[in-house]
Amino acid sequence: MAKRNKHKHKGQPQAVASAPAGTVPPSGPDAVVAHGAQEASQDVPPAQSQEAASASDAPAVEQHEQHEQRVEPARRLALRQLSPFLILAEYEARSLAHVVGLPEQLDAPGLWRGVAYRIGRYRLASGFDEVVEILPMPALTHVPGAQPWLLGVANIRGSLLPVVDLKQFLEGERTVLHERQRVLVVRQPGGDVAVTIDELYGQRSFVESQAIDASALVQGRYAHFVDRAYRMQDQDWGVFSLERLVRTPEFRQAAA
Image (cartoon, rainbow, N blue to C red; front, side):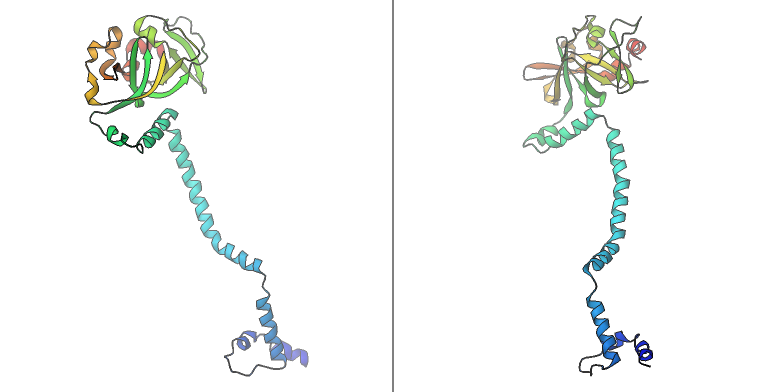
């Protein structure tokens, strides 16, 4: 009989525990059941409560991870679509914007910025949008029967690029290659092409007030590709159009 009464009151601990203050505590079997229920609620390990909190936060964490998984490939794709040279140019432009006095110069009328280099005795510059990247002189494979100013082809990250001696193409004089030789990789229809330069100066910026007559600066074949020029600190610079160069029929036939 005692065992039967114990089962009868087993389902009533909540009613006993929630009794209002001032009521007489239960005695006998009811008191035992109420005390056991209270001890059970106090003996829940902290780990279980932490697991419950983690379980409640799981959907938010999972959504954040899914968002990062979607965004990260898009970031990588955007960076792959830019050449390393253009990425560095963008970083440089951001850093220059924080230098005292430079933002006003960058907003000057007629501002032009590009890559500066030397070919022979001429100091030249080409727009950032015309240069894919700048590389050391790559290993070359000779092409039999090609024009003398076509030095050969080079394997650049799995792609074969023709390498042109730009000085020889423009002046007819062969470039003396050296260990510090650089080439500009230029985009053209059908694939990129690399052209040699004698010396790399880096970035240059010119404004409208520095413009000079380009016809008095360059001669010969250079005049077909230079229609703007600037003078800065007693040095004359011609703006060389690489885009016009790669559209020249003679150049395309040998470098395509």
